[in-house]
Length: 449
Image (cartoon, rainbow, N blue to C red; front, side, top):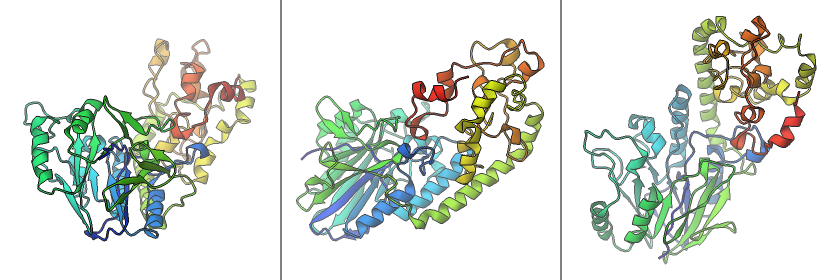
């Protein structure tokens, strides 16, 4: 039977016993990496998000009763204070989506396993037995059942080399153990949720244990989605990165998988992109309001500490630059950079640090270019913007976003700011789904000075 590897994010509703009828809709998704909702910076990158995923599931459930959702994990962001708030939101949404299982991913491991909600059916079949996650799951259907295993490569997680391994590699011993478990439930449709490298994938493929292998995304560029992964002997489907789409297929009572729509991916699965035509599910509105309020509280809780930094800030604001550089200031005033902060206010995101860093001056510690003078280098690590009330002169994208802090230049005009090469300065913000149409050759003339 055809084997499949799907890189996607799994996460939705299932009842203990399902009436199979003619077909069951199988959905694979995952790999949010903290991208809980499209940022709205650019229409072209406006895909994905948990609210749209829930809307898609609701639409499908209105047409088909048997919907089986599997989540491949790696949904958490990298560790941070705001990341902790996202983890709460993601797991709240997952519980509303009710997945069959959620594979423990690298980012879940990185944030600490204590952050995983025990009410969510996390799956890790290659655990040594010391963890409290599912080792497999059997789903009973009216005509045919499904058994699901999940593999997370030990190469993707940190393990203390002085202790016995918690996550086991694929090898003869692991495969033999899994074969015994699978044979106890002969006749079931066998699915593997996979997150590892190509060599590990090929070992599972050659084992013949699974009818369908579904893998997490190894692609980091959401603008160039990759939906296939190739091994030496076969090609497999891979889920869209950052949760921008879903892989779906219909499983017949004969155990055959067929595409759900016309946009077919390898191994009889199809892809559905979560574009703006899917409205946000109202069931998650309260969850996102709670998150936004918590992000705002976090922002203000840091202000006392940051006010001291204001006294030492190397950023002065473009009002100081205008006196000597009026022509450049005029070009800036007529550009979208001059109104960058207003776009956040219009969307209620002017307290969100992840958005602010590309709409104000010096929110994150400044990194000096390698060729900066010793006088300029001393400002490396300095910050600027605190809030629109405390530092209104640092709102919007200004001179110092690209040219670096100007305090040393203000005190001595012979000391030039730590300039960055224009293109490298642009792509700090104009990248990924935040600016998918960015092209330096066409964007740069609009602000050249």
